[in-house]
Image (cartoon, rainbow, N blue to C red; front, side):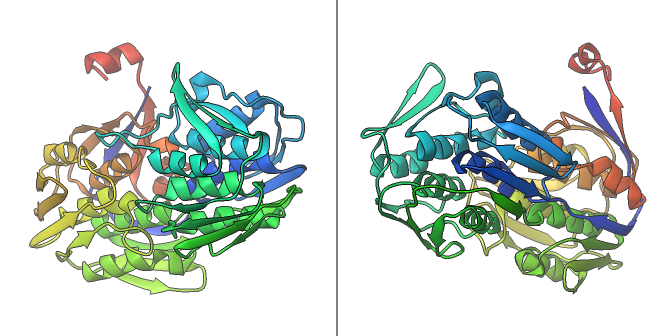
Length: 431
């Protein structure tokens, strides 16, 4: 098992290149199932969730060829299987996207109940099922698999109103609908950048999707998608994480390969905290030299403040002067990481969906454990800002969504390294 050893207290300086968006890649890769030809997908992040998605495609019978570290060619023309490997699909939340893609192409799908991050509560897929059912599919759960099948062999058009704004459901229904008969409408759709990216990918392959990025998406079914090339957008959350790291640890970093518009919701809140952010065409210069100021945060669907940045910004606010309020309105029970921050001296009280964050003068290094992807990133930020040494365990969560995070941080001057610890010593707490 891997641990990160971090000696904090060093400001960050230099440049960091942002990778392709994890949340777009894990949907676009399953969407390649719909394409009758070769897809060349560029700007793919080298993270474990992407590797799992590509592995699932290969197990289904796809041809997957790595052109270089960030470009792959996928050929799904010979796939006939509609059942994903149980041991792979259960390890990743994004395996649910294989349901929509397989249903859209074959009219049936069997996908293991997904894993991925657990925020301390159930992450339902009822809105996904609502859409599939409206398009004529029967969906059941049997023997650890979600089974879906179109009653007539092919999905048909439908009008689907999502009861809650769901990124996953929006993307999954979109994939299922691109080759369904007739016109499908998704109302109260999610507007996140990766929703738009998936729509752009499918349209570049021959789909007819309009309205992505608004709350109403209209999909006219087509008979076939053909191959082509597509580059994934930069990762909004990775960029925001490095911005938060500079805010917490201090210093000045040029964040490259970003879409500034996607960063507005994060930039605005960091500026309220006293962080300087200069926007350029595809870069942001982030600088923090003064004490941090308090602010209030409420997570909301895009273009609001993203829930995937909530742990990172809470860590920043734990070092700000005064009392800040953080309200989580997207995912319930997402504060499990707070206990780890308290080990480092943070003063945070959680009341249902609200965290009351009273800033402290400093955090202290401690042994801490990641409990999910973004919580793990928050602990890295805390360790970078803390006085003394921290040991972060369960870093496999972090590597699900951050490419070469140790290498990138070391290039900014951070004192961080990854070490291998025998599993038996890890379990005994001897690592």
